[in-house]
Image 1 (cartoon, rainbow, N blue to C red):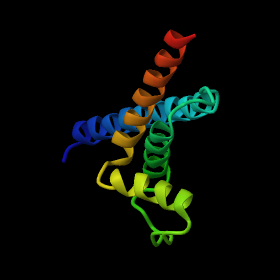
Image 2: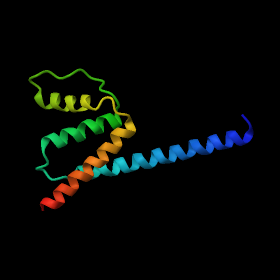
Image 3: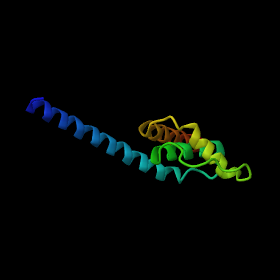
Image 4: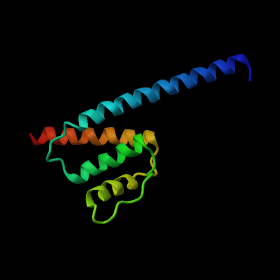
Length: 110
């Protein structure tokens, strides 16, 4: 590998890191926006957001499934497990898309 190849590789790496940082910042922005969704947002949609958020921030499920009498935590765990195969980047992108969709639906309903 010559010097030009090293410089090109370093530039490419820097560009990728900047893009990831931008994606992460946008994800964090939409995580804050999700907190302002209407209270009447369907539980199904809240669970989808929860699963995508956990996949984006933690990665694959790393806990045991809660017992059947702990239905709320079990539903959250199931939502996270449902997106376990997604990459962090895909989970962030899907999360942003879902928040945008829910914001549009809320605006149309008001």
